[in-house]
Image (cartoon, rainbow, N blue to C red; front, side):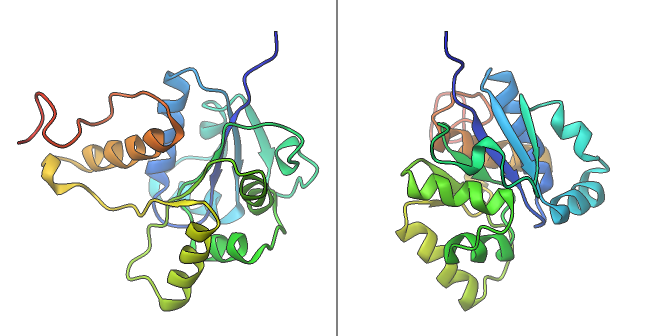
Length: 193
């Protein structure tokens, strides 16, 4: 029996690495196969924000690829995937994807999703957004990507940073079609009204 295609998770060097950790844990808990790639900047921010090394993230993935490995299976459209999320997505990474600069595995894998019309979700966390970055994000949206800005849902009345992180990770899983219990939606039973 053929193995299910993986969901590709790219972690770039923007602030927001706790969201990436939560997405990876939730995908593992859902039994979804994951192909993981982490940029050098992603490694540095993961260390700074979470006190973690890449090996901790690798434990959540079924496959791990080095960002410099442009020959990895996820760099080719001939290898099926269920889509990709870049979480967090730095402005530099968004620009490279929007401009078609596949100089790393992360950016090449994202471009494969676009050319194959597979789901691509980018999660920028910067604020404020420059006009240049807004243009790149608009290009990504026009190309079929979902731009999921890491904005908390205050109507859910989060009580902790973990609540906000769970909500953002849940929004990513929503767009990947993965069931979860990370947050309750607007006016859902037992949720805020």
